[in-house]
Length: 325
Image (cartoon, rainbow, N blue to C red; front, side, top):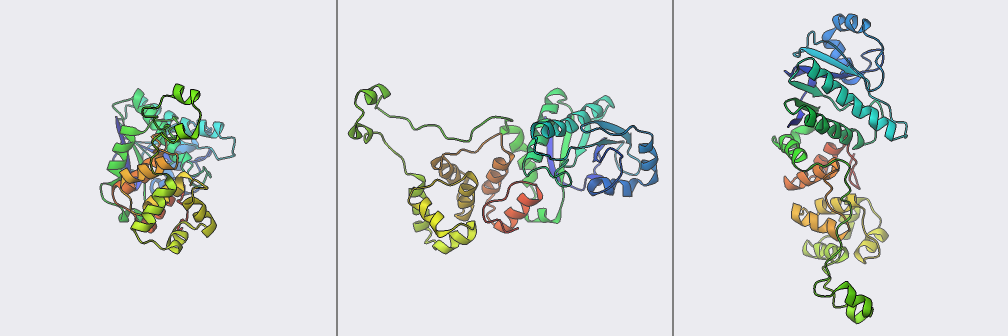
């Protein structure tokens, strides 16, 4: 499969087809649509006048005109109205119908912006996850197609040059749509069988089960090892002293995003991050682009919250607790 997530201005890409997210009237009203109309001018307006109105999820084609592509494929993404299933289905159809049309036209490569991610109010992560779900599905049907998903902005300059190529590889290797890996597996019972416990349901028998360090114990160990001031954690995560106290006392477990934020605060390795998540009852979920992205940031030793928060914001992913944006 050839899936690439790249940092690029989509209008500069030398591909067979560029996707233009527009409205039913091909109006050029904003974002990538506006930029493409500015480049192509009156030729594009005349060509789109000859096309029927563009229904949600459909794909229509015009020449590329002044762009470095042979074809412009126009699609209309849905707005988010909180009926969830319909909007996600329609957004996925945008990608699938564009790729199918590109294949029919004989294209070997196609580039997408992230459709419906801003002007159509899709929630953070859902637009990106839906895009990747649909693109990987298309590559199963058209394995020789190169499909590019573009992001663009000066904020990317703070990331390593190979970050997006590595992220593309991670997504292709581990990403698995619609599977739930949110909770870690139960601990093993070592030499004590469940039948024995049923026959002898006493505290002394339960005490024989080996129990690993808890989340609270690991958190307190990290605080002590790093001589961390309580106020530094409160400021970094924007939580109250009472909330932190409950985490340290084992009265509450954190959310997954709070656990990730703590891992980044303490500059944990990816293995230690996985351990911290596991102790909180979570695992890195291969069906979550958010988890894959945060994992790669940690693997690349990127712990600067300004860089991370800018990246999550501009990729339309959910912010970490205490986001600086």
